[in-house]
Image (cartoon, rainbow, N blue to C red):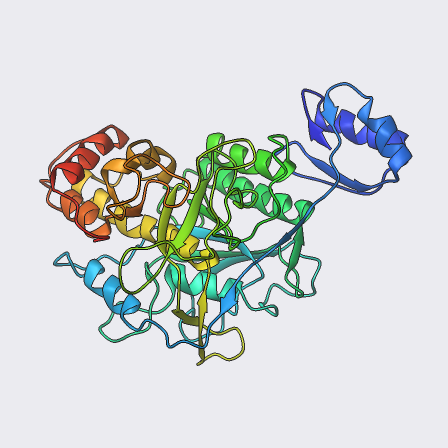
Length: 414
């Protein structure tokens, strides 16, 4: 049940009136979940001020590969972080990983997980299915050192919000309760006067999962994602899906205009879209994805043993690359403009075509295969890092940074 003006307590009363069972509700997002039959749902749907929706199923989607891992991804980000005399590590970033849980005992993830919650219905917050551990590693795994297996921002922190059960399936209810918890943590951090770089202040929600796009803007997960972004200031980064090259295969919630949908390109060789990366337009006609980034043959922490690694492909792993990149861009910007400077992909997207690159035969404007393109990471970091340390400004400086990136003459993904 989604509120359309009716207070949550009134909705709960109406649910009880028609005989709803096993009632649960969000703290902040104005939604209630319950069990009821079709006749009860029809009766409830006649009550003004609320909408009744049948719950959907969501899954993670990944491709195990027999090909050797592209060994230089850790090295690429090591070099990128080392651009500065004092290397970047993404410190200050906290990403809430809404997934199948995290094997936090893995040698690359020790002390990275600073909060856990389980909304999956499975017994523990650990990663039995085998997906969330890999997503977590891509964001913040390992350490900054030459030759080390590491993710994008090894100085970042992780919140393990388990919403996918041990068979790889999640529901509207679990995902929304997870989003609601992250919003509550962000609100609590603000109430306590914590700065955005505090570990317990979540900055990004990563959703490497998806369901079929039903074209419904009132889908409860889409509503929750929009509220997380617009009301609580959280970037919601989502996997576009692995159902390409067919058009109109972007999954939900990546299909929502507010969220950041990330597609995958081949990790090695020329800049070319991964064949399985989902394409737009969405059922509603939105051009998606928003960005693309590497997503094939990536080496990541295993969920099976603390010293093992696996190689996988998928937009599930492209999305956390972008989530992790938040940490490097934000840290470099804070160094240039001061600790009050913030970075959000939802704002950067407005000038996305000026700091992203595509193949020469791709449309210049946002398109349904590459979106705005692959962010030119080195250019963005370099331009922010070259700003005089005494420069003043907050987000109002962001367009200037992007203009500098544009004028620098972008070449490749760096």
